[in-house]
Length: 246
Image (cartoon, rainbow, N blue to C red):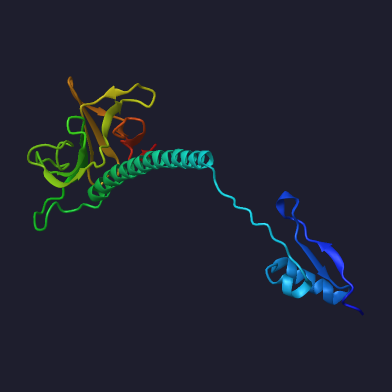
């Protein structure tokens, strides 16, 4: 086969109508050479003849760059805003479950007849105290005063033993305390709430404090809020020993 016979082959894909022209002989060998030339056009002049290239300079215009930066800033701002909201909800959820677990801990201490202190020979009831006047903390206590057969009066006060005090972080706080005489009754706003468990019963004693005095309730609700008040969690404590987080 005479490879001096050459055939014009156009390689498309170049702008402005200027296409590189390569010449190669007929046959399989010429097709292989052509394929190599298409990918390595710089070397194609040596392999198959001639190759003309047109170099095009492309890039972003100023307007395109400003629009891209603007979109990036908006998307980043939305993500950061949602992250802060998500983080505050997670912290509030953890706080609500910490309250519920503390109440459950008092129930376990009360029913398991835990000694108030090593060698004290006191086996009191245990409870948790909440107050709207100190809305950034709650207290786990041993009810030893006054000294009664049941282990105390079911309220936290002078003479009782402080087991642990829990501080509420990140600006969250106890926004409301509610007492309910019956399941169908309305909320009675409380200034303070005492929940205690007298051995050996798993049922609790729920005592609410108002300006009118103390009263016993069937169940109570502890409402927790974020600093903005946008998100809330409610811990419901029943006298029958049940605890729920909503």
